[in-house]
Every structure is written in structure tokens, then in C-alpha cells.
Amino acid sequence: QVQLVESGGGLVQAGGSLRLSCVASGKISSIRLMGWYRQAPGNQRDLVATIDNTGSTDYAESVKGRFTISGETANAAVALQMNSLKPEDTAVYYCRLYRGGDDIDYWGEGTLVPVSQ
Image 1 (tube, rainbow, N blue to C red):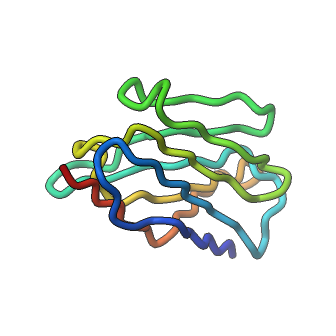
Image 2: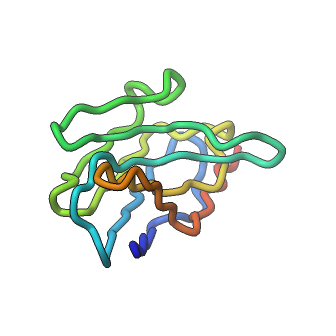
Image 3: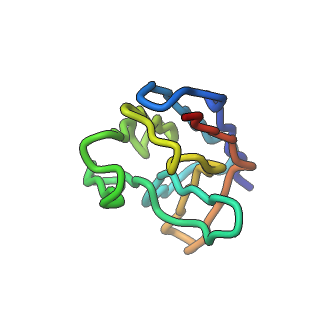
């Protein structure tokens, strides 16, 4: 089993910054990818940013230039630096770990990021 612990969420004003962290523990070998997804009320869970075991990153168009994912799958830890936050960034942010060896996804419990006007 794998456990993901997220931290860093909280209320922030529009234009502000926040840093989310995610640390994995347990059976953390063969990590293929880690990343962040978000879900706003009434919406589906969407990609925010991911980083794979080659260091390649992927971002949602809406966050490019504002958010930066960092970390290494080998260390089983990733962070998401969020700058120039907008009210539409308000969501619950979830950490995801994909273990390629057995093709299993793990998710954190989520951390709420409300962005006020």
C-alpha cells in the first residue's frame, strides 16, 4: 500500500501564492508519475500538473506560467508552487501517484485551496 500526505492548502487572496506538498510512504518503488489534480464543486477532477520518472512535466493550459511542479519520483515527493492565483483556481487539490510496475493509481485525501476575490 501507498499513503500520500498533502499539505499547504488554505485560504489565499487572488494574486497571492501558495505551495502544496505531497509526500508518499509505503510501497513506493517503481513510481512512474506523480502529480496534482483538482476538483471544483460540481466539476470533474482535472489535471493540474504532473512529473514523471524522466523529469518530464505536463501542465494544464490554464495554469501554465503560473504554477510549477517540482520534485522527483525517486524521492516520492512533489510540490506545486502556485503563483498569481485566481478565484477560478478554487478547488480541492489532490496528489496522485502512479506506480507503473503494477499499473495502480494512488490518491491523497485532498487539500482545499479557496481563492478569494
